[in-house]
Image 1: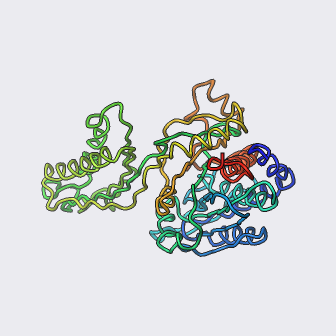
Image 2: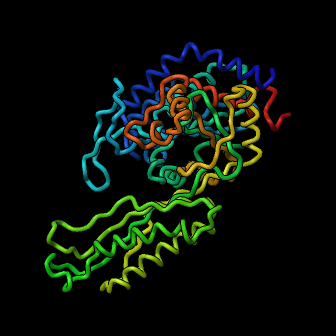
Length: 427
């Protein structure tokens, strides 16, 4: 069988499972769970895999799940889906919208929703795993499906690795993954090399001297200090990094004070940094620290600022050969809907998994926006305003063709290696 004939054979079962994939998606969307609390989601994935005949290992890194299915000699391919949701109040108006809440790391009860499409990732992976298990003659080798916790916090992949992931499943030859993005549904997009940025989250505590709002001369005002830092930090990218070099610095949170006539004794800034190049990353982080320390000295602060590195994500840099293999398979399967995507400023921790095994990977995007909505916004030049993006309270991939595309993309990519008699290492 040719690779395309094998893909046809596996996807012949898609019509028969479509409603089940859609039902699973709706259920997961209505029952979102934060990182390392994905017990219900992980349980549904593990139960499904066991029913399809996979060798299942659950509880890796807390809530991670793997399923292994062997079909004789051939390559070993791992595909990964993330499971966690976000502390975001849902505003989609969908009949299956989330009403769930959860306590965050600060002990605050917050609304929770799948604002980044991880529910779609899980539903598509379960559907793909079911089709592969049923197509006994269409592929050869070993298939590993992996459901990862806590991608949003950047520590889920690391938790699975530290819990012995590399010793719990066979070593793959390649790792594959996909993500729903705010492009037209039906589109699939690849990119060789740099694809998603590295990300660093920082907390800066500026120390002042508290006092009465009527006597600022007796205090050192950390609110003014914080305001000056916020303004100055806007120059890191605009004045210290070349215009041709992509980087982003965002001050996402400022906390200070308890009342209008009280000068507090400290202010807290939380920052997010996105870069693609390690040297640029180091320069940006060093510049941020230089700026906040200089502003503190200029304000006569009684103590140096405290700079804490909270979390970090590695850059996603797709292997050229693996990406070429997937891009070629997508072109044959999706035609004009297979595209090359631009750099993405979002970040991912998936690359830590192939790094732990020492193997190549490629990570692609699929569209999740209603095509007519996207086309109308594109004509008006209002895509950024009118198309809900990931992490928005209004973000919810249109059911179809998003889910079908996700299942088809996973199948097509996996069979580029596993197709019976085909695959890049058996050409």
